[in-house]
Image 1: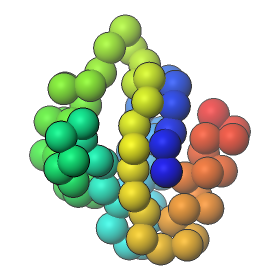
Image 2 (image 1 turned 90 degrees about the vertical axis):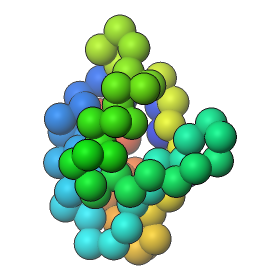
Image 3 (image 1 turned 60 degrees about the horizontal axis):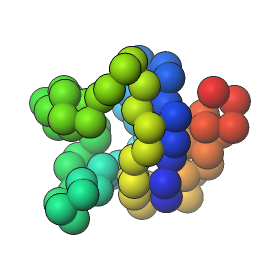
Image 4 (image 1 turned 180 degrees about the horizontal axis):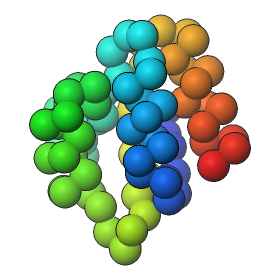
Length: 77
């Protein structure tokens, strides 16, 4: 799923941390980073963070309830 215009990065990672299954960030090169890993969170955000906002990410959540959590976050962000 593509997510756009994440302004509240702390809340985004709280939602990711609350997910039961694996949540991955797909890089522009096609690599997949585990977003539940704090190290991956810092590395991935350092590479794509600009102007206090994340313009667009492609993430993969493997559990249906995790997809719902992420969609709910985006709808109410």
